[in-house]
Length: 65
Image: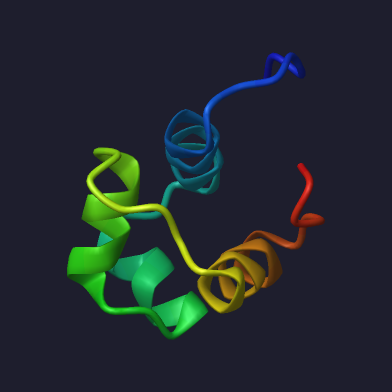
């Protein structure tokens, strides 16, 4: 994976695909509505601090990654 600064939506999509997860898989692991995962990846919404922490935990990365 390229470690340069990427927009959140792209970084999340890349991490999800590296894990072989569908959006529904990430939603279940993070405890977030599956529609919100799609919205984040399509830059319709920016995740709240709480959602960002849940996503980072699901991927086992820091929130600044």
